Length: 252
Length: 252
Image (cartoon, chains in turn orange, green):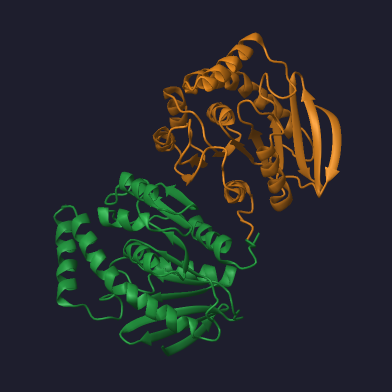
């Protein structure tokens, strides 16, 4: 893991890093705390490691809860080159949207391909993060994400026992994702949009139903998937506090 | 409003009161704050103003958030006499449950009758509470409830503009309640059990869909309606903080 920049503002240290082909960013509290929860944050399809919503959530987690948060660009996203096949998928989504045709089938295939490639990258990133003295191997690890970041996180959690809790948002649901969900056993918080133009409400409820976790909670909010209410940001941070903090304390 | 007892423990003053035939209880912070939110708390059918879950939620709201919380016995519940018709309904529910027959139709009729009688009682109670110098007419008012307390609260909110926010749990849903829900416009938080023996999941989702509120949030949790996770208690208090606190601040 090679840090390429370090800046600091409002008590948060932001470091960009590369790890082989992976480009990522790490946000840490200026008052570094060994053993504080580490959150992995997966961006939406078409976005990148510094998507505005992701950054807002990360900064809230660092400043209010003292967590460390890491995000990496998905393959072909952000600072990473796009291959020919990824470019074709992107074009197909763009064309379908412009023509008013369903984008879900294309997005589902594209996401599955990206997530499959991203899972070993997240594992390598996690190895490198845990090797940092200010994080360490004992820091409890959670994962949060939206759309593409959800597919990646669920696939990651089925093969990676270090992921101890998941807080996820909207996602296109297909049979493969339902099968993946059945294998999830860690605590999960799942936010769904109630009135989304593209993402079906019933499919979202079916996904919640499929999660194998004993501790699972569903939050539905009005509007589309980009209209996640701001209070859900704090709800997610508190969810991680409940499940990842060693002292068991949720900040009052 | 006539206070019949006053005790104090752990920073909370508990006062029992009567108001005509109504029997109630008021929990206030020992450090009384004029203008702090006032929460009205409606108990489940068959329970009473000091149902364990209700008391736990009330004490959490008073000690952690400085709210004042009031609860009254529904007609024929707690310290209040039961009339012949109420006794018949109670017996019918008991028999149906013992025989493994559906209780929903009986509960729905019984709840509607109780709620209709409870609405003017809550309004009279609210008048009396707002006349207390330590509460005052300007305190923002929220309402929370379970089952019977939900039916009562929704009916109350449609006729009582002083109710500024609602945080409710599981309830049997019929067409009349759906119609009532359409008239609700204040912010609402609604918790549903995902696997309840008696309360249908789809009916719960239909009720959420029906709420006319622009700001509404649905929380689903595994298990039955009595198994509300403890963290939902704080979520509810924070919901009220978002919508009732004059300074707009949610305690961190």
